[in-house]
Amino acid sequence: MTRVKICGVRSAEMAEAASAAGADAIGFVFYAKSSRAVTAMEAAAVVRETPALVTTVGLFVNATADEVSRILDCCPLDCLQFHGGESAAFCQQFGRPYIKVISMRPEVDIPAELREHSNARAILFDAWRADAPGGTGDTFAWERLPTLERPWILAGGLTADNVGAAIAQLAPPAVDVSGGVESAPGKKDPTRMREFIHAVREADKRKHEDAAA
Ligand SMILES: O=C(O)c1ccccc1N[C@@H]1O[C@H](COP(=O)(O)O)[C@@H](O)[C@H]1O
Image (cartoon, rainbow, N blue to C red; front, side, top):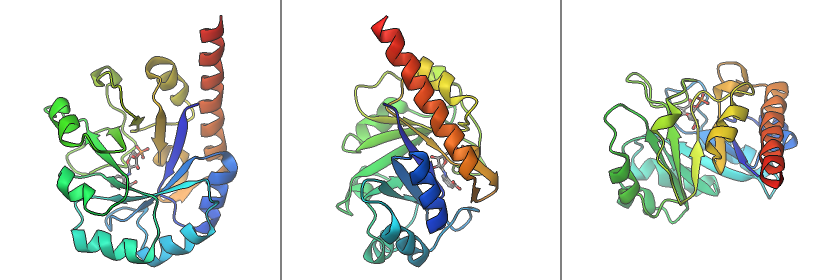
C-alpha cells in the first residue's frame, strides 16, 4: 500500500481531517517564508493531539542546528525532513530518522546525493524552482527518477487527478502532497484530502488486481 504524507498541517483540525482521510504521516513546515509555516509551540499543540499511529514530520530548509534542536525540545516529532542543501552529518546529529529531499534541478547529481544520504530513512524527490525551495505545486519529469532499492517518496505537484498515474507508472512506496489538497495557500481542505487518498487507494487496488491477473 502506498503510504501518504500530507504536508503543511497548521492546526489540530487539519491534523484530524488528514488522519480521518487516512494519512499515514503529517508534516509541519518550520520555514518562515512559507504560507504553511508554524511555530514550535503551534506544532507541539497539534502533535499532542495527533493519533499515535500517524507519523509526525518536521520540515526544515537550511535551518541552523540550534533552530532544529530548539524545536525538538518542545515538539516531539517522529521524523525530520530536510529540504535544503543539508549534509548527512548535519541531518544525523539530532538522533531522529530523517528524510532527505532531492530537488530535481537540471544539473542535480542524484547518485552523489544518494551516496551522501545513505543513512536517510527515505529520499524524497521534489520539483525544483529557482525562487522557492519546495511546496510550489510544480511537477517534474518523472522519467528522470532513478530506480531505487531503498525507501523513497514522490512529491511535487501531486493532486487527486495525477497521483493514480504516478502510482501506476512509478510505484512509489510513498507520496507527499501539500498544495494539491488545499483550498487556498496554507489551508488544507478536508474534501481534497479525502479525494487524494481515495485516488491513492484506487490506484493501489488496480495495481494489486493487475499483479493478480
Ligand atoms: O510546503 C511548503 O511550503 C514548503 C516550503 C519549503 C520547502 C518545502 C515545502 N513543502 C514540500 O514541498 C513538497 C511538494 O509540495 P507540493 O505538493 O508541490 O505543494 C512536499 O514535499 C512538501 O512537503
